[in-house]
Length: 223
Image (cartoon, rainbow, N blue to C red; front, side):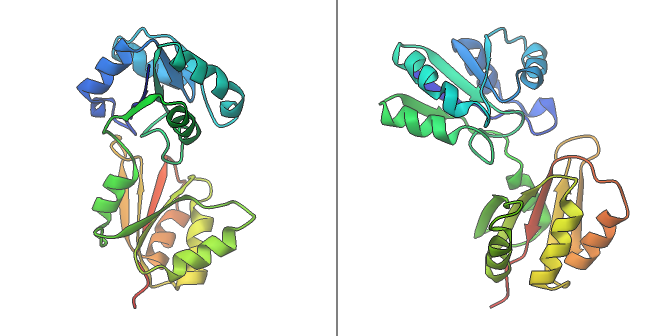
């Protein structure tokens, strides 16, 4: 019995590793955040392993059944729509429960959006804080204040529809001159990274329709 966490490309399908394909072909079942999205990837690589839906809206409900399958001797892999499971995506609850039941767990190395965004930003990456998605309402101002006071580089995920609003809020708490970088569509045809002050980055994205997954990298507060 073994649970594999398998990273999938955040954009370019060529970023899939040989080992990831081998594991997905060898397991008994693949848990997928969106089976329709994952089916495209599986077809591209000739993977015929059965898929089962596993996402934030059903993970509590199906968790016990998945653990039972693992304890019966099945090998199961979990994938998300893009990137590494458990990083702002489903996966943590299953891993925690698997470990609690003595199930072997292995996370394969592979794609995750924040690493290339951090490196591309040109901001210090020897020490950084990963915030993921900030709360939409309750607790948001508290997290924004913590980000503003943080001396290490901060990484924030955001949807394209909320990016401009986030940049406006960051300008309010950090000041318009704080250095920042925004990456979108990482590894895709229209990949873009915009660097500058928060004001400059905001001006750029406020003047256009924003598309794609977004990673905001914010410089730390100067001590």
